[in-house]
Length: 232
Image 1 (cartoon, rainbow, N blue to C red):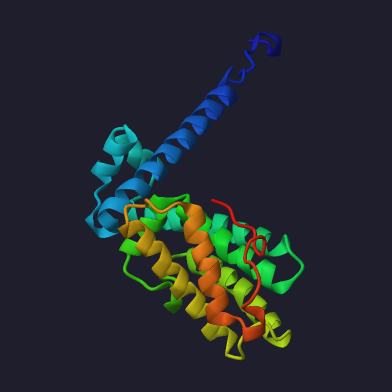
Image 2: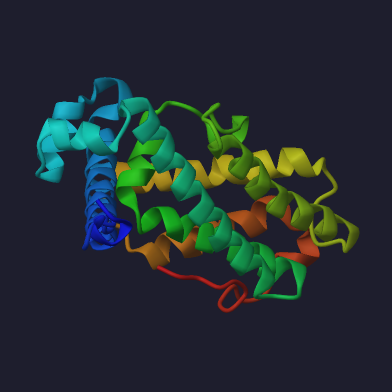
C-alpha cells in the first residue's frame, strides 16, 4: 500500500465541546452540592449530617455527588475555606474604604457582621461547631490561614488607634479577642431570636457596644450615624 493510500487519523470532532460541557455540568453540580451541604450542616452539624441527605437536598443522586465531591470532610472544609476568603475580601475592602481609624474599624466590624447576617446557614454552621471565635479558628486546611490573615486587620487598627489615643491601652491581641467575642454573642443571639431583628438594628447595636467597650472617654461621644459603612 502506498503512502498516498494511508488513512491519517483524524481528531475526534466535538471533543473540546464535550469536555467544556462536562466541566460546566460539574461546576453546576458542585455549586448545588455546596449550597445544599451548607443548609444540611447548618441544621445538623458536620457530625450529624450524611452525604445521602446532602445529595437529596441538592436534588441529585448519591453517585453523582461522589463523582464531584471526595467526601464529607473535604466538602465541609471547602465551604469554610471559600466563605472565609469571601469574608476576608469583605473586611479588607471595608478597611480600605476609610482613611481614619475609627470609621475604618467600624466598617470592618459592621460589614463583617453583615456578611454573616446575609448568610445565616453559614453562621449556623459556625455556631454549631462549638468553638469560640475569640479562641481562634479550628484547624481546617487552608481556612485557619485565612482566618489569621483576617484577624490581623482589626489588630492593626487597634494598634493604630491606641497610638492615636482612640482606644484604651491594652494588648491589641486581647482587644481583637474581645471584639470577636462581642460579635459572636450578638450574632448568636440574633439566631436564637429566629433572625427576626432587622440587620440594621443588630449592626447599630454592635457599633454602640464597640465604642463603649474600646474607645477612650473622649471618643465615646457624638452621633454614631455615618461613622462606619453599615450594610445589611
